Length: 116
Length: 108
Image 1 (tube, chains in turn purple, brown):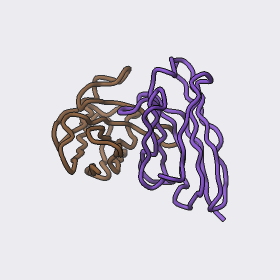
Image 2 (tube, rainbow over the protein chains, first blue to last red):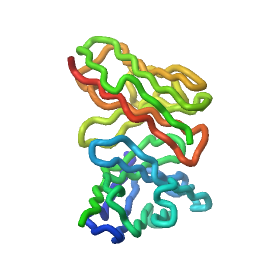
Image 3 (cartoon, chains in turn green, brown):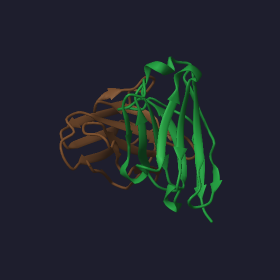
Image 4 (cartoon, rainbow over the protein chains, first blue to last red):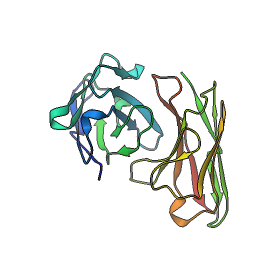
């Protein structure tokens, strides 16, 4: 069974940093591109970042470029999102999802709250 | 950036009725469109990809159609567990991947 488990969310002040993790199991992690998608409270889904299986191709949505960094450790079946210079508008549940075009498996999400 | 517009925002129907949800793209996405279902407090679930292909384990009452800029998700006969929010998503031209704003299917 495919499982994705996010961790690392929490409350942070504006301008602060957080590192999210996503641990995968039940499939060959190194064969798949992986994605972060977020959802602000009561809002819709927003694609955030993508890493190809080898980390050779990485994309970000414009609003996080220069502030967020996606990375992965295939030996540890883990995906990461380093978030710096956090803003109020980054408050959301952050999901990791398997895939780069369609997302056929999702984690349960981790809540990031940016507030003073 | 390709903008996806979903309509209606809310659909009020009774169990057993047919649901028809629309997604319109600001430019052609060919057939590179997916549909997701999200229930409160849960992660989204992939229902349909490439406009009309059901994902693994998705019941046959869910079907997708369309190409280019106009797409439809149809639920042939609503079950109690189908009341949820539905999102469309394109992968024709990215980054960025984009989602529609969602359609809430609620019990009438």
